[in-house]
Length: 233
View: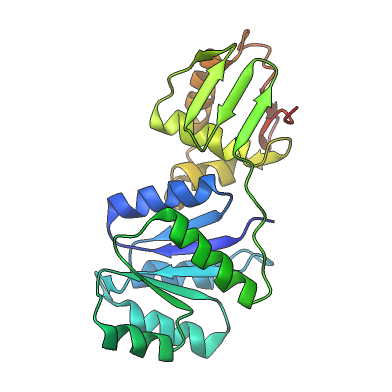
């Protein structure tokens, strides 16, 4: 099971880039742009699917992230890594003393963030499985680390949304991913009912990656449920 991460960050560009990077690495990422949004997502987690780790910015539009840290510490042991541009040593010490598992100053590299996340999860007895980053099935070759998609040895150009959709399916190759999960992970939780997005982009992906889009061999439909990428060879 992929670690479920709540990313609380009000900067839209950073939130989007972090969400994509963490998703490619195999994390199930939920994103929030405010304290209110974060609290709502924590409160309404599906049964049996609690958040495993919180990445918490401090300067949020409706308050300071420190308030959410205090609430999380009162209510349980969810690991929290603070991600902030504030670099004063006193602030770092205060937040670590208040229960943050780690403190990372922006800007930071994704490799360092992933390493700190692994440490925080291990401390709580939760281990993250390595993500599938290279997928091959017949003539289709997808290298997520290099952000390269090839078909019969020729590079295929995908739009950012097409690529994000394919990457999400690669991470669970051979398994069905539901319509709602794909919409939430690629477009955001507010779009889970807009299945026309999914049909449109899946059609575009099949036109680029299938020899016959009417008889797909890679991008398979599970009627009424979702889509499945054929199991890697």
